[in-house]
Length: 432
Image 1 (spheres, rainbow, N blue to C red):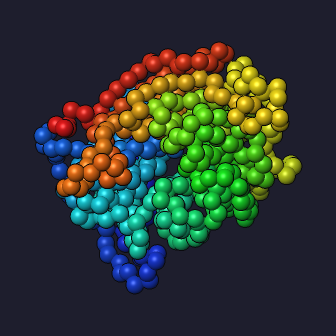
Image 2 (image 1 turned 180 degrees about the horizontal axis):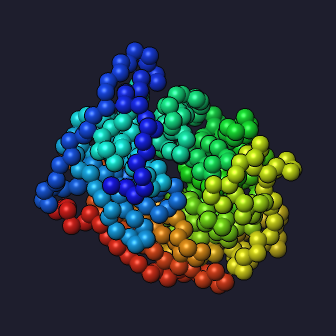
């Protein structure tokens, strides 16, 4: 069971009608058949995701889901089910509520359904059904965002009423991000044009469109208060940091010179550092030169809310300035010729790095001030046709191992990070 008290009375025990079809009926909630898996049963890893404060991560498997603590790194509990696995497992901080989306082989929950699971009661509390595949689900304490290929639905977590519908460009990655402070509600998603992100400040009734990149958006993240946004495109060379209130670009850093798929970006809690992981197998940490005005008050829990969502003495609540960090991203040797040479020669490069095997899909986060935590899905490509094929497009990755790393970096000198912890999970269950 997840830590924390059960969420009593949050959901009605009924099925939520199909948001794309008004003809859905209602049915009562029910418990899923949970079973003990045989040690010889193969378990395929389908997904890994952090919870909102990075203290836990969830793994969707071909037989159910598992929850892990990040400090100390250990499995907290697992749920193996007869009906099949879940491709999306979204936690709500440390409480007993999870959002689950079934894998293709799930006999009861296909990929076009979202199941809200109460682990305290070990049962489904409600479900959302759509005509198309669900690409992502995001939770905060008062909202649920369900991401489809071309649309995002936002519901109240109290009464499950549909509050907002947002049209997007094709979004197969299920990109969506929510702020998590009680006094701000910010949602970020792809816009309707290539390289564009849409920022919704719902409390202020403000929509901001940011043309972040020339290529399609591959990854983005928000600070917990939603005031800073970091984005990367499918090119994977540059990461840009924006003020979400006015859309101005505050900083640009460079991951590398060659193309890469950036899979994860994370701000440190004090907003002094930014970490990014990619399919190149290297985690980069960048020094930030921006800070949030009134940062201390925003980070305090249960702050009494005034009439405004946050302090807005000027047109923006962000104040870009030189950071007090003792470290700084190294610049190109040609940075003195900024404006005369292409951007590559004046880029800010990463301050610290940690290198892992390239075969992993990585998600990254921050622990303490200079600790970086990394979770990787390890696997290989398998052929999914009976014919002899040579193109990689006829293969799919199969993941069967979770690797957890904790490493630290020198906040003054940067450079190569030092590994402090490494743990592997799931590997023993597969006989490949």
